[in-house]
Amino acid sequence: MAKPRPLAAAPVAYRISAADTSAHHWHVVMTLQHPAAVQGLQLPVWIPGSYMVREFSKHLQDLSCSQAGRSCSLRQIDKASWEVRADPDQPLEIRYTVYALDNSVRSAWLDSARGFFNATSLCLIAQGFEAQPHTLELMPPAAHPSWRVATGLPVQRVDRRGFGVYRAADYDELADCPVEMGDFWRAELEACGVVHHLVVAGALPSFDRERLLRDTQKICETAIHFWHGEAAQAGDLPFPHYTFLLNAVDDNYGGLEHRNSTALIAARRDLPRVGEPKTSEGYTTLLGLISHEYFHTWNVKRLRPAAFARYDYSRENYTDLLWFFEGFTSYYDDLLLRRAGLIDDAAYLRLLNKSINQVLQAPGRKVQSVAQASFDAWVKYYRQDENTPNATISYYQKGALVALCIDLTLRQQGSVTLDDVMRALWQRCQGGPMDEADVLAVLHTLSGRSWAKEIRAWVHGTRELPLRPLLASQDVQVHEDPAQIAQRLGLRVTETAGVLRIKTVLHGGAAQRAGLCAGDEWLGVELAAGGWRLSKLDDLGAVLGPARSCVALVSRDKRLLRLPLTLPPDVTTWRLAAGSRAKDAWPA
Image 1 (cartoon, rainbow, N blue to C red):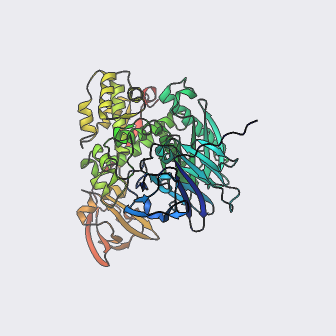
Image 2 (image 1 turned 90 degrees about the vertical axis):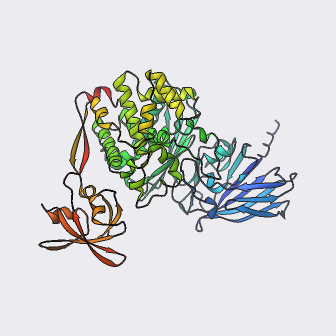
Image 3 (image 1 turned 180 degrees about the vertical axis):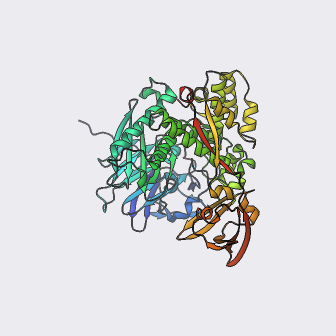
């Protein structure tokens, strides 16, 4: 029998090893088979799905280039770009090290317990070869014989632990498949005939694996049925397999969507525990995160802004449509939990209630439209400071409320729902790039009227959304309850080791009128009957009793200030209550 012919070397190949887990160093050897005479190299400055320039090149060091054992001339062009003078007829080898200690879903991590990376942090782009096939060889670390590999990359040749060679059709595919290494727990579930891998690192021994597996399967099947109908089969889905990479840590939360996988991070205490069947608030939040990132597989990874048809990794990629791609996904993440039977109507309304109050309690909703918030994500949403709530609005939260308003308006006016709109957009744009005109066109086709007025007001304007009447149309009533002390004052604070410090002063609130400032340490209050030390904001209500006025004692830049403060009596917060008709129409 003839031996199989060896595979031809890919135009761009990377060999990655966990060189030094104690120093948190990944070592990369990159090979270009036929480089340009002046070959450009570039490391991305951002990762798609996280809209901020993060300067990954700051962790790259010891860069060198050679051909046939001889060094090549290397020149740095800017903060993340280099030029190499090379012989196009000989392979070019590029070697470098990347420091990795960012325990998030966006970058890279390496220690003695775990390795993780996105290619945007480790893999230089060979300019001119972006559309060519790439291979990624993962070397097994000798010091960690129990480590395995999990990734959504297509396999070319790997061992039983997953170490070996993976392939990508182009750099975009390579960048869109994060890699997990370590001694993790792994299991499989099947949803509509498609195998899904669930990988969890860092969980406590009490982690209820079977429950998370079962609940994740329900989420996947519900989302697949949403996009492709109840009779959906494997061939209908836009991916042949899917991988969840969940990193359980002491205290963190987040996720990043990819074409056939997602990287998740959550607090260990939020994972389900064996013997505790009750669904905690933290576990509900984790299920919502899983639902959110999985929904993104369709809504932003395939159906995506036209500006993202081809990513430019060297700079910001602007779009004013994040209100749709992040906001509408945020609307459906909890809604699909309800439809999957993982939460009931009461729990769903509590989640919706929380989102509504977060928007209504942000003065920035009157300053910035949700379309502008989308465009400004690069400099505002991901770079928050003490004034953020006063000047901006979240395209996640308000975008979800725009989706709610469209959905309830459609339901009120006829038999069409936002579900129909999403599926029609998928068909119209063939699961590819779209813009706002496509949204307007589908809404017009399905409802028989123009939606330009609503989109102009709700998306590009800053007036209040018509939430109250639309909720009432579904027999969901709004009750106004007295707000907590922080909201009555217009404050956000931190309380650490008995120190009460002001984090944010909301525009137009009592705290702003009194002259309180972000960064102040609030020491106590003076009343006619004497003074009191404060270590928690909630103590203020007990100290004041029926009184509404006091003098706030604060420390600012080591100076002691006395600031007259009066609590307004009429600050309220929304509480939603469903009537008997609500469950018959929505959110089912």
